[in-house]
Length: 478
Image (cartoon, rainbow, N blue to C red; front, side):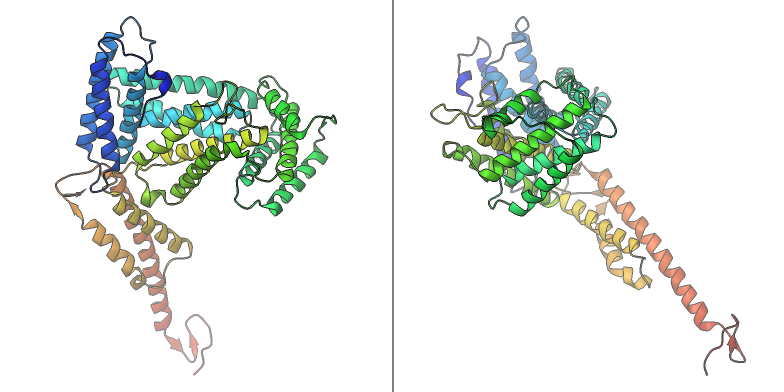
């Protein structure tokens, strides 16, 4: 990748060598992530990680009296940390501090966008809070295994995220228990409307149903919509601007303002479905492709995702995000700002893409990609066994033979209790062993139930009869 033009300034004395070393490391990391001929190995990632930390120490010594300086070295350093973080996930070291870097960076972007959007749900904040708390525990557990310079950096970034979260929570804390469900419903509707505006075929029926839903809400919760000569776009832009200063708003005002935004936005997109100013069509197409690709990866994550693949999506999104003006708008090649419908649609795609990356990163399994095929087979087998158990089990132990054969074949792959790839013992052994044990446990329950059913059936068939009446007192035909 290329560095940002605005950062192409002469490097300070002594940093040229660090910059060159980091460029080489970044190139090696990018080659590592694109090489599909073999899986990413732990020793390769750890070697590159320790090499980057050596450059960090050298940089800190040079900048002892100017810690706040930022130049091209920092851009490349961030790239290296992002790639190393994703590589740690790829090799199954999700519970190590370096794996956290990329997720925290994505969370920071997501929180900035939630602040700017000025509408979000408690579920959004709860999920982020839970993961940040888990990350702090991970850092604490591995403090002795990782460089203090790196853990200090991570803790500072998590601290910044917690500060933003506190401000966002303060806004939602105004909501009463009675109005919280209504507010959450409006958040969902506004997001659904923005998604509808990006569909290749505008879903008129779905939007009409949401409009009726909003009208029903409006009858129960009246809002005052200013009847003036301004356009819908101008009124919506005003509402968005007002929403950015609702830290001390009442619960009623929060709901009222969000309902008004929904009503105005649905009018806008119904008048001009899917409208995008042509000068912004290239940016829209890029964001739409990224969103669609990430959604596809979310559906097939377990079978197709290599976490390092997300790096390219992150960087492409960051590049678009950083080109926005200080007030958050987009500019076309001639420097003209986007109209409100184009702007909000582009922002929706940008935020949705960051949210999808966050989902993919936080749902990544702590298993090396070398063991993922086995892990995925076990997960599928466990789901099948659970479905059989929920459906009432099997009528005969013989019906469990196919499952038992598959489990036994996977169990026989282990060498001295380890799943090995050649001479390597990839990360994720504990996760596979646990899954395997859970599958055997469900199998045992199913077999036990089937055995009991067979015994009852045999006992009933062999029960003696006396004078045409069995021992249970029931008449039987002769």
